[in-house]
Length: 134
Image (cartoon, rainbow, N blue to C red):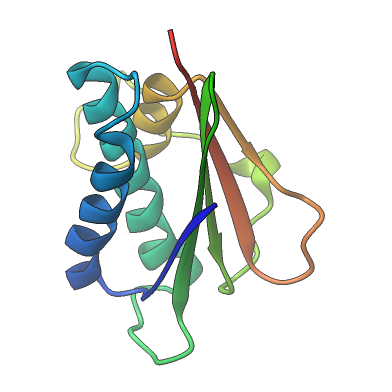
C-alpha cells in the first residue's frame, strides 16, 4: 500500500495529484482513465478541504491517502479527521441549475467505478474510490 499524508490546504492539491499520477502511470489504465482518476481524487480532496475542514488550514487538519493497486483494480482511500459527514445526505446539485460549483459529487461518481464511504470509523470521514482495470 502506498500512503501520503498532507496538510488539508489547497496548495497541496498539486502534491496529491503528482503522488497519484506517479502511482497510476505504470498501471493498465489508459490516458483517459488516468485523467478520470486524477479528477476524482482532486474533487474529493477539494471537498475535504472545503467541507470537512471548512477551509481552515491548521496543523491538525490532514488528508491521508492510501492507494492499493492490484491485478484488476485501483483502490484509493481518502481519510480526514474533520467534521463527520452523513453520507446519506451527500448529493450533487441539480444538473439543470446553471451555476458554478456543486458538480464534484457528480464528477467523482462519473469518473470512478465504485464510490463509497467507510462507515466503520469513529472520527472524520473515509471515502473509497475504485477503478477497475479493463
